[in-house]
Image 1 (cartoon, rainbow, N blue to C red):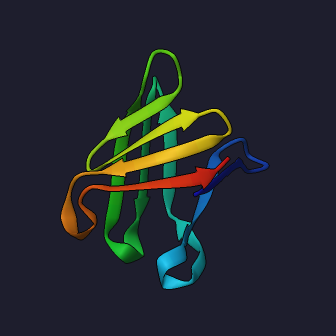
Image 2: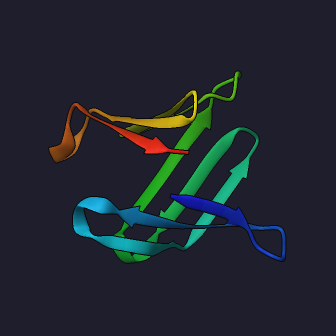
Length: 91
């Protein structure tokens, strides 16, 4: 996921799906407020809600948790066909 701020100050994002060779898939809405991240991709019927840890190193949501370790972001999932998957993403 690539997140940035638009000229209006609002967050905007796109997602790459490496296993499907798809890049820059549009995230319709993305909001980070009061320690909670929410985003939705209507075309894929996908949404995600996560809470940022107090130390700012981990987003915890279902079915995916994201954690920073040094210069890497680690994704963990325990649900669906990718159960027990862990991925490393360069930050």
